[in-house]
Image 1 (tube, rainbow over the protein chains, first blue to last red):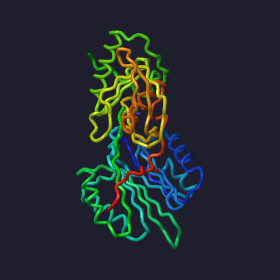
Image 2: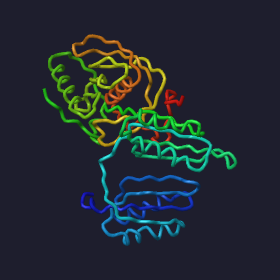
Image 3: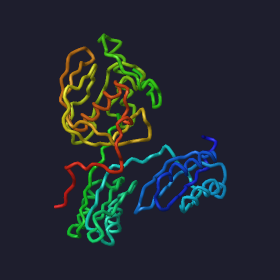
Image 4: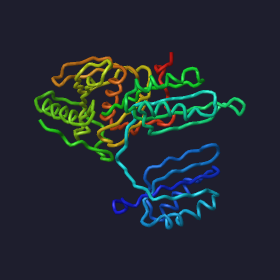
Length: 177
Length: 168
């Protein structure tokens, strides 16, 4: 696949969830001679969302044509961007942060704001709204790198005391064997 | 002494079941010295198993003493190791010299009891816990042809340990 190394695209697909989206989109890409890189695919509020690295010998227009028939037939929105691809250089997280509380506007901005100032580089963030419509709960899980150390993050989140948000920090100690 | 070549997945030799060591001789000790040098040459490596260097024998080396604030037994050479007791479980992040550029979550026993021999054939008995127990279990898996990839659990919904940072 080296011949395609410099032809990376980010394919974004979003729309109402139904069975078979991944299989049909990736089949169209495979039949069109593409190679897939890393991907994040998840269901968000009843939508299925795909962020997919694709190697393709062409431009954004030709890649769009390859998958548009499938995405249109499934009622999905499709977006394609040329990107600089970079495989085999994963950054490893050294801290995991769980945040939860009664849902209200501003939780993400407040929490990530103080963490960013204390040196957190976010590598992965997942969040969900749970509970019920009259009593929603916000739950967020973050993995990242504590560029100024975990104690700096612990001090930083202390300012959130009394704001109705629970923040748990835990080091990620990777064992390489 | 020499740094040995580390086999990487999908090399089929990593899937072999390793055989027990039968002769505790100078050749064995020379290999163990090379294996240890190979482990220490790897970035952040705290353990190694003979199959990773292409030798299908039941030999592992673990040394987690470089990690701050954990219980450990220093440098360990474990020949023909057998885990005789498992207790508790914990999710932790692992990587492997045989699987470059990836780490994943794996469930391991929190505490283990182990019987083994040292490089001279002297019987050993250990109780390991936490990070050191994880390293030993990871390395012994190599002797049975298993990689941490065989035991991956979700990275998305991590089980949080009870021991977490709590606000005052």
